[in-house]
Image 1 (cartoon, rainbow, N blue to C red):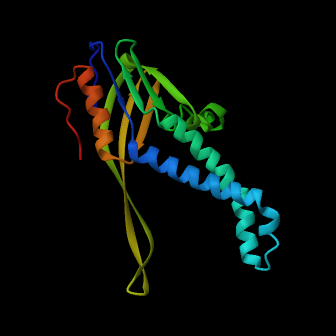
Image 2: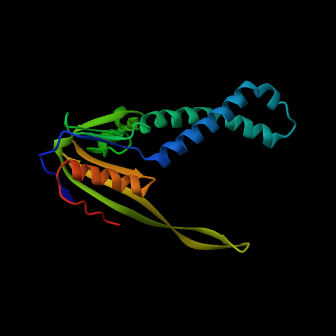
Image 3: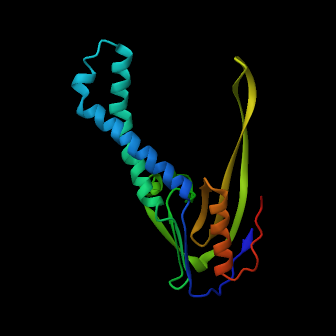
Length: 199
């Protein structure tokens, strides 16, 4: 973990995880159009003789349209990115990375719906920050050359953790470069010396 200095220049910086934002916009619009079309034409579509087709239309009506609203709301939050404002001593970020303070937090509406809101913490209260790749392996079935075999799939997440008087934050980035950019910006704007990125 890297310690944060108290002295910071009057500067600001914004970092947007562009791949995540672009993906949310594309999927949000696609699901909205598909789900909306099914709702507008459900009478015609459900009159088809194919039962499986009717079932898929019903699922699209029930799942895709609400899902599109959820994704677009998260897009609205994430498109503003992570804002470091040293003049006002503010670090503003999209929700989804706030760690639970205790087991009761998991039942709090503020915690459950944090991904649909933006949040702020006092920049000077950040005590530690760490950039790393979280690697996990799970067992699954893999298809190769028309044959199915059991194997392991490795998943890597570009993470940025920080903690302070506010508690703990843990962000996952689609782009390793954007994660490193935010890490470097916090380090530089707080006069922490040269960033030391952990690959």
